[in-house]
Image (cartoon, rainbow, N blue to C red; front, side, top):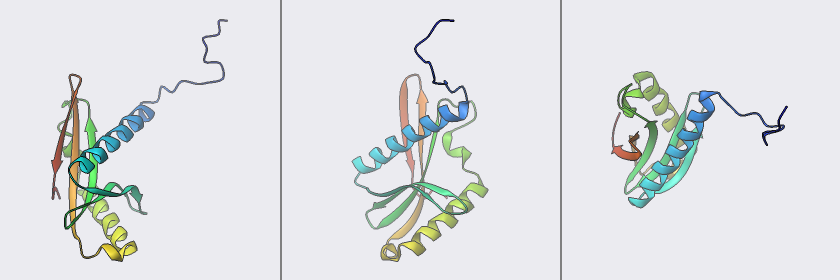
Length: 133
């Protein structure tokens, strides 16, 4: 039996781990995009019992709660189409929970955004949908 240099390591074939890596890359790209456009990032992956918010940032007088969606094609539609009514409700609940934990931010106008990243032909397209839901 030949040693292929991976002794003791298992290579993951689980597509969920690949998606998790891509999702992390997408969130990082979205965070950098927000910062380049003047936003101040406050939190990444904020969790509550009912859900998670990918990014939370101050954008002028708004507090942007951002859902990041990444796809590598349009076969299943645009990335933002994956945000269902159920997901939006959980997202709002988590945003309210964040505001309860951070009353010092209550003067800012809350806003629910989606940043979509679409990877096509080696290029990545970014669209920021403010007040998406």
